[in-house]
Length: 267
Ligand SMILES: NC(=O)c1ccc[n+]([C@@H]2O[C@H](COP(=O)([O-])OP(=O)(O)OC[C@H]3O[C@@H](n4cnc5c(N)ncnc54)[C@H](OP(=O)(O)O)[C@@H]3O)[C@@H](O)[C@H]2O)c1
Picture 1 (cartoon, rainbow, N blue to C red):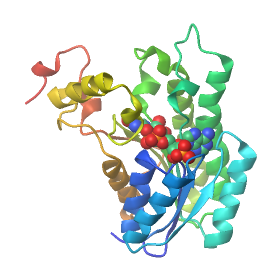
Picture 2 (tube, protein in one colour; picture 1 turned 45 degrees about the horizontal axis):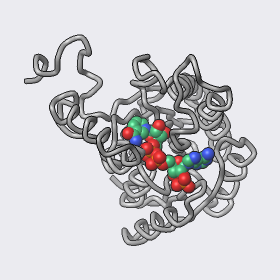
Picture 3 (cartoon, rainbow, N blue to C red; picture 1 turned 120 degrees about the vertical axis):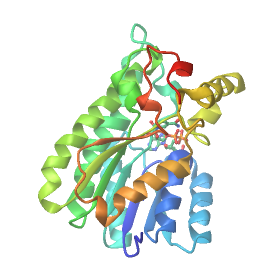
Picture 4 (tube, helix red, strand yellow; picture 1 turned 90 degrees about the horizontal axis):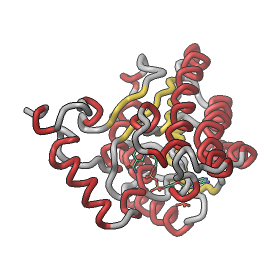
């Protein structure tokens, strides 16, 4: 699959899953815009990795919770590249900014989730679509488990914000269908080399063991490269007929039945 001649902007691509997406699109030949918020050194490192792969790119900074900065970011990328074919809304604030259970969550924490997810996607997808070539691709990186369950209580702000973003994906898919622009949400499971690695070691071990013992039927956590592969796949011309969907990129984790112990479900 070749993305030669395509131009892509991925928010939150200085590190984590966003970096994995940038690198896979670059490997396929796309010219990529690496976006960061505060960590310019990480963005520079990602761009160096892009160049090691023989691809080209640029760096752009913005706080995606600020609509005017999202508009400026897309304007800068479009001015530099002269075109845009792929927009991936992936950035997410640090966990303490939104992590609080429903009885205690502050409106500031709630807004941190909604402003960086639903509102950032509304403004980003709309602005990207304005300058995007027909046949383009728009993605929201979601966590659909959090948007449809209620057990992980401090996730209420982010789960609700992701649910709103997934809803926007469907509305934009219809709005942009005539131009052949597809709009999909990609939902990874817990992923290595991302926010996971900022958690205490004991928590990381608990999560890894849970998935390796079977909650993920493929018996491992996701990687940024796995998610990048899925985004690259959906950028291919052959994916042009799939739009408005939430795609689980999770090694089968979403297929498990929470009412039955994993040991009784696995082949
Ligand atoms: N990690 C997982 O297990 C997992 C699972 C399912 C879904 N997801 C989703 O995947 C996406 C990426 O997650 P991740 O864990 O890879 O993230 P991460 O490693 O924590 O990286 C976050 C990225 O977002 C940027 N960012 C933070 N606050 C921002 C703001 N206000 N404005 C603009 N950019 C901002 C950061 O930029 P700086 O480097 O400059 O700070 C960084 O590039 C998120 O949407 C998340 O919900 C993650």
